[in-house]
Length: 623
Image (tube, rainbow, N blue to C red):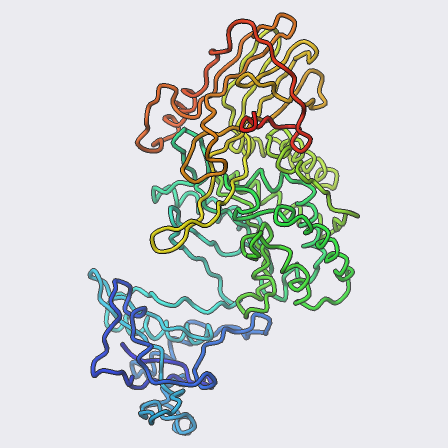
C-alpha cells in the first residue's frame, strides 16, 4: 500500500505516512480487493473545510487536447527509470526529483498532527498492489482529472514493462471526461449490464450492437429467456437508450429544448411506443412509468411546464429544462430515475456527473436479436431527425384515462396505434416499413392458438397486464414490498362473426366484444387470476384457470365449439426449471392450448352491462 494523491495545485504527486490508531494497518475483514478494505476511518481527523475532497471536473468547461501517449511515457520513464532527456512536471512533492520551491509551498505530508488539529494535509488515498489467484492486481486510487489518471497508468505500465510482470488494474475508474470514450460491464442480479460507448454514426451503431450480441453468444450468454410456462420473454434487463452530444454543450436537448418536448408529447399521444418495446413489468410502479401513470394532475402541470419552454432559436440557460421537468418526470414515489424519460444526467444541480446533457429512455427491454434492437434505434433516430426539422407541439396532450390500461393493453390496438406512427413517419419523408417491427409484435404478443368454425375464426393472444406493488410487510432484517403478478390478460379476436346471432363466452360469461371497424371483426380482453400467491390483491379470489371459450349460437342456445387455455400443464405436471431451449418452451406453450373442451348442452347466457371504465375487458375476478 502506497499512500498517493495529487497535490492541491494539481502539478505534483505527494505521499506520506498514515497515523493509525494501532501500530499496524489492519484491513477491514472481507473478500473485496485491498483498496476497498483500508481503515480510512482510523486516519487523523480533518474539519469539513480542510478535508481533501475529490471534485469531478465540470463537463461544461473546455478541455485541452490530451498529450500523446509517447510523450507521457517519455516523462514517466525519465522519472521512474532514470532515462535521459525526460522532464516536465508531475514529481512527488515530498521526496527527490521534485520542484523544491513547490514542495516548500505545500504542507509537509509527513508531519504528525497535533492534538485537536485538523489534519487536512494527510495523504488519504492509496495505490495498492495485491497478488490474488496468481495475478498481480493494482488498485487505482480516486483521482480528480483524466490527465492524472493517465499519468499514473503510464507509470504502472512502464514499471510492469521494466519488470516484465503483467498486472491487472482495478479500483476506481477514470474520471468522466469528454476526451475519452468508455464502456462498462456490470454484474446485476440475474443479468450482466453492458453500457457501450456512444456512437456518432449509424454505421458505428450497427457495428457495436451486432458485436455486442455476437460477443454475448460466444460467452454463452443469452439476450432472452423462457418462463416456466414456456413464454418467450426478454432477460428482464433494460435496453435503455441514452441520447446526447459529444460534450454537454453539444447536447441537442440543451441547445433545442423543444426536441425533448416533442419526444415527450409524441410518446404520450402514442401509447404503443410505451408498451411495445417494454418488459413485463409495466404500470405506475414499474421501472419506467408513463407521465400519466404517476398522478392524475400530472398532464395539466406538464402542459403548464411546456408553456414555459423558450421559443425555438432563443438562448436557453441549460438549467431551465431540469427545473421545469424534474418534478414531473418521476414515478409515484417521486424517484427521478424510475421514469420513462429520465433527465438525471441532462443538467442536474446535484453535481458535474449529472450535467452531461444526456437523456435516457427507459421503456425499452433487451430484445432477443440485434436486428430488433437496431430497428428500435432506427425508429428513434428517425423521430429525432424529424422533430429537429419540425417540432411536434400538439395543442393539448391526450387524456387517456382508464382507456390507457383498457384499450392499449391489447395487441390489436397497440399495433393499430403503432401503424399510425409508421404512417406518420412515412408522410414526413422517413420510409420506415411496418413489417420491420412484425418480430416485435409477435415477440411481445405471442399467439396461443386459434379455432375456426362455420367461417368464423377465434384467435387468442397474450396481452399486457400492469403489475401492482403491494404495501410494506415485515420480513427478516427489515420490510419488503411484493409485486403482484398473479393476474394475467389475454386478447381474443373474432373474425367473420354476425353479432346478432353469435356470442363468445369465457367460463360461461359473455365477452364484451368491441368492433375493430372491420366488418365482422371484434376484439376484447379477458383478465383472470392465473395463480394465487400469499401476498396479492384480493387474496380470497381463487385461481380462475383454465379459460374455456365457447362460440355460442344464441338462436339454438348451443355452443358451436371452442377451446381451452391453461396457465400451466393441464395434466398437473410440475416443472423443476425453466425450458432449456426454444423447442422445449414451444412444447410447453402448445400443451396449454386445446381446440376442444367447449361447454356441452343447452346454454342460456344473460347479457351483462358493459363496464363503463373498462369496456374492452372482461374481468373474471368480478364475475
